Image (cartoon, rainbow, N blue to C red):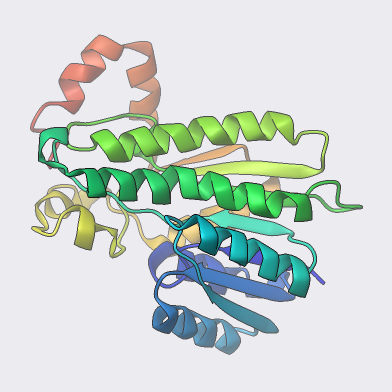
Amino acid sequence: MKTAVITGAGSGLGRQIAILNCPYYDNLVLLGRNSDRLKQTAQDCFKCGARQVFTLSCDLTQEAQIEATGRWIRSHLGSVDLLVNNAGLGYFKTLLNQDFSEIDRTLSTDLAGTIKLTRALLPLMVDHVGEAADIVNVASIAGKVATAKTTTYAAAKFGLVGFSNALRLELKRRNVRVHTINPGPMDTNFFNIADPSGKYLKGVQNFVISSDRVAWLTRRAIEQNLREVNVPKVMALGAVFYQIFPRLGDGLVNSPIINRK
């Protein structure tokens, strides 16, 4: 019996990943803060042929909930074959305009909570006999190239990329594969919190990618054991350019042409 655990499964990319993975796993465990949205995702999964779907409320900013989730999965399912760390949020504000609660919420959800949940489930994933287990960390192009008004969000995503790279090395001989997905702007409700004005999304509409496509790329990363996926391609190339020419990159990403926040 194969089990997949997906965070942030109540909407957007997490929901699409859950639906797309229905045929590959016997058990789907959907995690998120909104139980009603999780139930809707579960219904969509059943329509697509899911066998068993479990919905668990889990706020990654709450350590007790992470521990309880780990205990439930261990006692009811015993092992985990896929963990998709997709939950995340951000605020497109300068650091001076962020309060401590926004900073804490971003870092706890996007980085610290993700690391803690991974730690809680890792004993159920290592040293599988036969087919390897997979960990997918959904980071961001912002984890490769930081821009103004993404200070805390970029810090969390840079951290998640680093965490993924280190974890991949640690688990190389434990039959667990680690994949990092770095999408640019997506058509999800992420921007309801990050940019309520809609200014940024309107400014980058030519670069917006669908959550369906990112979900498909995530599945492909698992099937082909891809280390990292960066989309869209133009932003992926921009990230490489930035690494080679950082000073010139600073000027470009801070220009009105690139930074639409």
